[in-house]
Image (cartoon, rainbow, N blue to C red; front, side):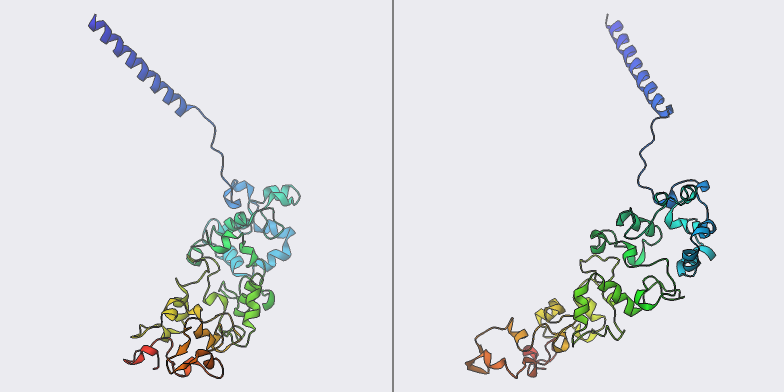
Length: 330
């Protein structure tokens, strides 16, 4: 009896394993449904037959094509393509053009850019990031500009070359440098940051108007790990790029200075000398608020508010290495 029971169990186990094996084989060999495709990015979609070539594009869009081929990007794509994507020319960005051509110029069958595009800023940017996703653009994803829906074409104008300076956005006339001219970079930034335009016109300002400094000397508009898009990790490290003598270390350090240069200075412009955020001595009195000054304990500190400046005595306010410099006198 026991032997028969064991034999039955073995037979049941064998049948179960055979059924499981058959089921696995059936699913592996059956065609099944294909997975839903993710968002396409133009050039990756379609077969070779879906592409018509840049020469075909130029038959209808000759003015745009003649302008584009003289840009740095156009020359690279048409004359010195380095990748299969670059060999697509116009269709590297706009996607396969066959449906667009066969549809008599159907605008819905091609990828378009700008304010009138049906694509979101993220979808438009995905086309650019196929090539421009490294280097200075490494932190674009999640950056302040990306999270606010800014599109690459909001600042860059790919289809223009030899444009007059006020409207130049993408590259300098016939140079291999994908940067703005300095004055133009500011104009691009001022489209959104209008309050900064007023600040740089103040009496004390960084040499923006003179073309010696521009927004991107301190900020990376394509993204950095900090919310202010500073190229360096902190405000102070950004300032030290030019003001290295303020870095220290000092024997006697001034805590507000070491904490953040912007505690006292407004780098974008001020109506006060040295880009100060308040007039002397009121700036110092924001922290140093005792009722009396040690030199005149019988008088209130208000007597120092007129025709006087703390730095007349405390001249080394950024820090001092003098053994007697605890008061930043020297």
